[in-house]
Length: 340
Image (cartoon, rainbow, N blue to C red; front, side, top):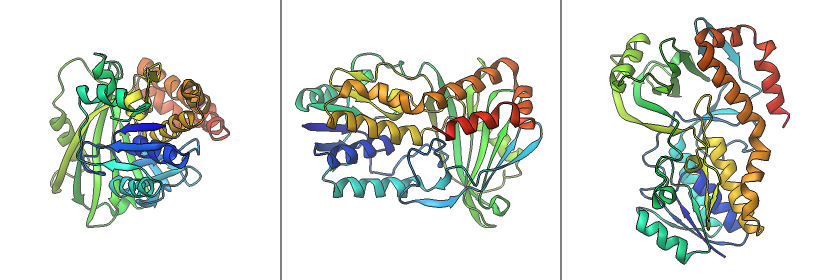
């Protein structure tokens, strides 16, 4: 069986390797070079324990999350599967593993709408891991299907003194929009580097100047004079696509809208969806892919959606109550997820 994988991110690379390991002939098409143009805070949160520690690119195991609502909470994360990673290094490692398993990787080979239609004719199956701008959805004029509900983000990578965040990540919820900003250190030292970004999950209808908002955050954190190395940003799809299977094409990762509705993270869901899509093909049961996926992650999705909706309805004071009295909701929810 010949399988084409479109996209060389975590979902596509995981799908490609898994398919090849199970005897399928796999060709992966990547628009750029593997590890380029990454829009991500680079925190890897595997709350369900389905992915395991990344095989490369781990910068540190996160021991503590500093979460500020109205007050600052220090959340012990030593028992959680949470790592700060260098995603480019991790993806290059995944590509090497895929090549070793027999995957043919074609970098700098963009797939456009007309190309997708040809792939669907030439290959037995196509796995669409092309991200929020899913090529297979564009090919059938469903451009907004996984983008109707999305988080809007902007991030910069900058140099500065991040020594106070050793083995820690910081996130701050603010009262004037539903979302948060983050400081994720890649090098937590006096001459360090961090990803600093802001995400609007349910942003005001008035047009937002994203760079102005980001600069406000930098001033709030006394980082306004730090050298900025790079700006990145974009949309995180929060509207899940259904069905995952369209003809002979399976959607995975962001192409299927599989990011957390609560905090926007999607690396774990990318890995899980890519793996299950490939296994369903190898087992001759592509129709079972979507059911298998939701069987694994349904409780996580329900709990995250519930918290998000209450946050939207009741505002930041609900989130303050949640973290001030976690025993009432948050801790039982986490234990429920960790026992899956």
